[in-house]
Length: 216
Image 1 (cartoon, helix red, strand yellow):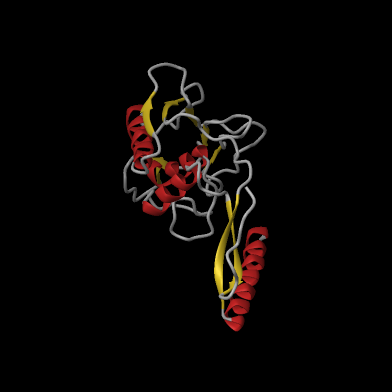
Image 2 (cartoon, one colour):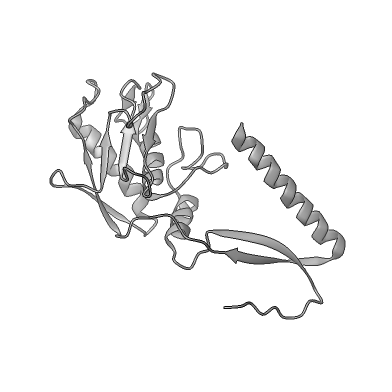
């Protein structure tokens, strides 16, 4: 509900600004406002591993599960920001497990499918999947939930992406989620681009306004 109220609030502000610009025959000007970006990954090749210290659902084959996890990471490589590979030992940047996040309990079937930690969190690089859900290692599962329909969303969070209010998007608030595509890739590239402002404010300026000199 809070998300919806916030959305309506900003939509109302945007509509007011657009109306104001239309009435006064003014133009839009984008004013980038940069502030300290949160801690992000400082390398471009990340390794992952499956944590088998917590039980894996018995109906899943570990080899098939690893295959689908690897496939989910490979989807994100098309963004040309990161490459991924399975770790050869215990030391890995990203760990996928079927345990509960610290301080949390799973809410059972048909509830939360998973949880992931952001790069700036206390436990970066952790992805948790609810073992009570009926996971499937088939790409298109008639029964159950395909790993590749949910895990790419959690990987997006681990890389630093947050939810979007758009529907049919990898980072939508509700799943199952769309496979990462050009929209998701652009979102990730913007996040890791050093020249991209974190926030952009749209302002109206009159056509007759003189050149604006910004202080360095």
